[in-house]
Image (cartoon, rainbow over all chains, first blue to last red; front, side, top):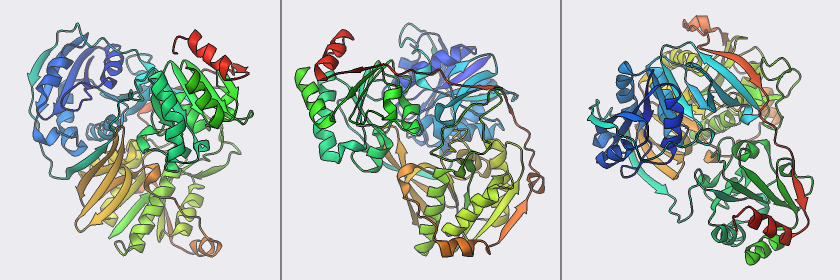
Length: 309
Length: 248
């Protein structure tokens, strides 16, 4: 089988999310990549270094700069004429593009796979991860999004792929990029952080969230996450949200502070290696999944913890 | 302008799903069912656009069993004007739902179709994007804000790195994220009124759509269970644990 992997990038560097997808694709067959962007030749050159990669298709066109699905999907659909599976990270970029490609190919997409069980058989979470479905596709071609935390990352170097230019139709004339407000942070990205400190509704407001959670995260060199309740209440921006419909994370250590542990939140973090919960309610559901639980008032316990580290 | 809002009847947000012992699926017998939360947000957004004078009619659509009519009545009680139920007891995959919706769009010519970004049962996150592809129309997925601007719609999207704004030429497809709005509750008078609103029942065959599944579910199993660990006494014990793990 010949796979086509979507390379997630910002026109400058290959994003980490790509590497787990390469591992998943390698279980299916030959791994070819697609770098679609603008002024992104350096990305293609770097992607060609990923271990196990064959051909790197480079589509360099201003219309692909922001990964608009209307422009990119026809390009992918055309390349799928000579590939068997389109394999994409389950990031917001991947989730935006892949179904559009699937529909163009008349294929039913398989979302958020956790494992490759056979050439056309995969496992995937349903009901916020409260059940795992094993599904087999009957389509001639596959379109798959991959849960990054479920696969090891391929080595970023050691490969010897070849870069080949491809051209697509470019601008479909349906949509335009207006702007982005991207969080600028010195902290590790949530999906690749080794340690995450997450705060919940108990943090009261954004000032309190900042004064309690951030010093601990800084001390540990940790990424910062939040429950949906904390995001909805406006303590932190949407990109902090961990859960069924937010980010799926699996760090070495996940510290849940003032998070009760709704199933939708657990869906986003229960594959973390060690879960530590700090909550004053000893009956909070978070303690049912936590490896280490501390029943305490977070407003005294967390500053004390930060001070003693 | 018309707005079409597809809604799905799913397990209630607060119910913990249980896998059937025979591994064929999740047990939905006697389980509380509700409108998919993202679809409620879609209905609310459509109503707000209509209230702002930028749409004339809202049509709620559901593909599902006879009981999905209740979900449509909820949408009507919130403020949708009429509803179409495409009745089937089969499980219909996103691709087939998108094909049915495409046919309805062909009949109704809406300016916008607003869908939930994903249903909380199968967690697919596909239908809106697929519909946009089948129609050859633009898509604004994971919307945090929607502004109609003449012949265009400006959609601010929740993306992994923060927010991104795109401008789409109408007609367009938009899928909702959590922060788009807070859906209203239907008032009792509106629930009563909704009973009299028009609800047409059709079948997938009426639209000439083959709903045969492309994916075969071989089995459904419980996820690996995470058992509760230990409770520690105080912060000092936690510091010791963190040092043991080598993270502090």
